[in-house]
Length: 440
Image (cartoon, rainbow, N blue to C red):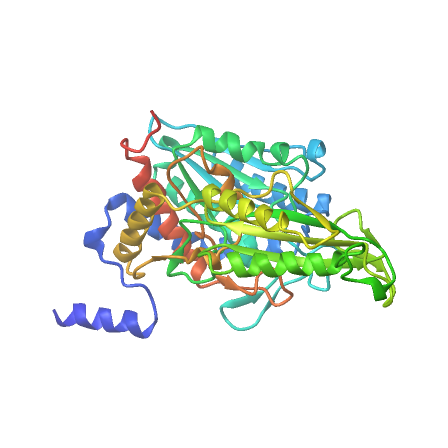
């Protein structure tokens, strides 16, 4: 009894996980040992990956990261290949498959690209202390890609990988989707149609005590308003009316008044242009406007996005927005349009909540504590959303914990790499043994 107490105290002092062996079977203990054994190699792989620029539009860099990970998966017995993205204007994806014995089929989702293009000042890694790495894409999401590979290694070492059916899709355009989007996301959707369960390895909200069971979709919208150009002295008259800028302002204010309190819904006007004439850049990121203070504005354009937790919430919100347009100021007219494609929402579901329960139990079995669901307001759109409508069980946020994604201060917590790999590998092992969640 005295020696057990000493061991427990020592583990606490060393800040190491206290694993209850009674909760882990023989295979799961092998998984844990393998992750620990290969952790240094995984850290080295991550360092190599983050020091390769793979901004979405740097096709060669994206392919280079894909090839780095492809070689690792081939070593583990996967049939792995890089696809061409020529049809949708991007670098392409990494697809790796392993067909095992009949059982639950697992889709694992990552991405190769980052938001940091070749002209970004953020190009290389540095250690801020013994565990925090500052690097482009370390949390979003090369760390998650390495967690996938580390988990596959552990399952192989435990002697169970060959009995599992797994498809890995690491996209090359998550940060800036190719067009048409139905081709860009075809491999993801095909994977979802094939699989019983989808697991995403994004960073989530940066907290290792959470995973994502629902994500809001994201869709772009455009508002075009027209008014009568005239001398400003005639504004508000029956003939001239209020002008385009006043009408655009009315519409935006009503959007805010009627929709801002809707739970889990956001809609953001990213930019507005107004005046006698407007010119929007071809890529839709801004533009220019011309006008004079003594001339009533003839045109106004607003571009933004809307994020909803479900298709139903999105459709109701779109109707509300259109109804607002129809109550226009005198002598103005407006048109609201929504982009094609976009990211669908990953709506909350019983299946996703069940996966959370399993993951939470595994985390506690490993001595890592409880796991909770991320508030969907804190989880942006991601590739896993394209599994919606095709799969009943999906969670995300299983990747490397970090902070400040999409900024030059992005960091990853390297101490969490092995923890995330252990939790993910055991989750996959336990799921692979189940039959009740297989598609009919």
